[in-house]
Length: 386
Image 1 (cartoon, rainbow, N blue to C red):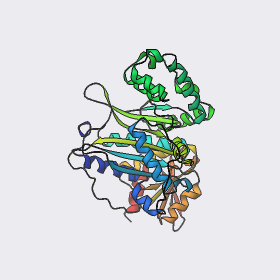
Image 2: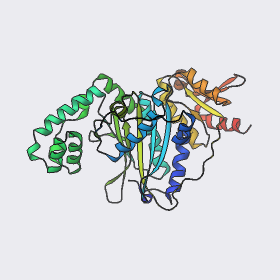
Image 3: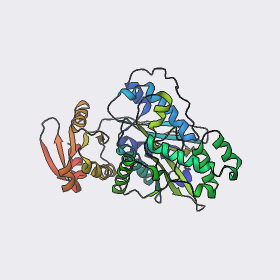
Image 4: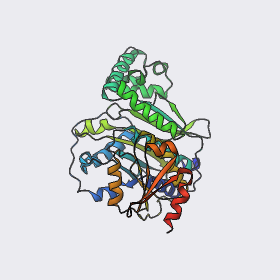
């Protein structure tokens, strides 16, 4: 759990002020506002009985139920939302969700935002620990091999791990053996050994985005959770603590399996959960939303790679902007800019990404200019004050 003493903030409220400013810049909307835009929630019955071991997974189960109840599985456009939840008088949590995208861009947005949040709160030595358990086929192969391996040592296991194995939860048994630094866990098979070609491509894309964003990371095959929850990427953001160990700032990943196992619907979701201390002022300041004057659109893999750096430069310069980086179609992105009546659109395609330029289009007159990325923040500032 992240404590206020780990940060440069004086209270929980100050921490959340910084966090929510960053989240809203990157296109995350509060879940309650998004829910109000949609039809009233329908009753959703739990159709499966997923075996969940972690508190984070149970939080994500509740969130997934809400997304299914509000019909996100029938909505084609990806959405980014956040939820604030008070767990107790001493702890609270902030959950980030990228809904409706199967692309590695969903996990990458979460990783980029988490790294920015860490920097904003004074955590300079953070490292993102990343693992992949692959798609359903890959993870099933891994679990079979892990189960066979652990059964061979079942008589040598501590009682708690043996109980987990007998309850049919080898992942939980493995995690608890890891926590105790057991030699059994140290020699267990790695999930990355069982990734199929599609899963390897997905992981490679996540890592390429992470490297391009300059986020320090380590591959860590011990970042696991319940098999009934996760798919493809799992990660933890860690920062050093004063005792020479580390604090887990956030944990998350892609959990498409939750909706499939629990509600029999196809709903791709990647999420991250930050659990933090409640200290001093507990609530963020009252927020008022004003539609920005700029919309950022991109087309193609090179442009997506460049997008994270461009967006972070604009955020640092204090220029609010709307974007839908998880949307592939440039037409769909420009349509949203028109629906929101946003006067200017910043566009980066393949050519612009290679030349380090952007097109700035006036959405009313359809006139446009090409601006070097190094001059983009200053140019947009001049447009904003007209």
